[in-house]
Length: 134
Image (cartoon, rainbow, N blue to C red; front, side):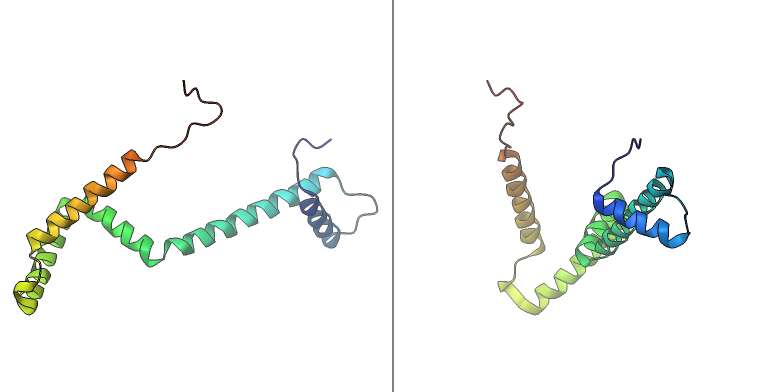
């Protein structure tokens, strides 16, 4: 008796693969079929990992990874900040007095971050049926 479980579709496709590989004069042993089921599952997991890896190459994921690198390396963060200051100063000189200064942008960014964190902290998940809410 098999101790592992598989779906009917997995079993059917494994049986077809086993019968296509070799010619049996008797029914194949369950271990042979189970080995094909495991191989199919491993192939499916490999394909899912490849899809996930492809999704990790999206611009959003790359930007998040760059942000994590900036947080981890103070020297890199300082170079980035200096570059951004130079770019914003150039933008200030182009747009003139109507443009917000770097200090105003930094303060606005910190205020948005504080507001977002406060919203996240206020958000509470409803208690599940197994938790004691009393």
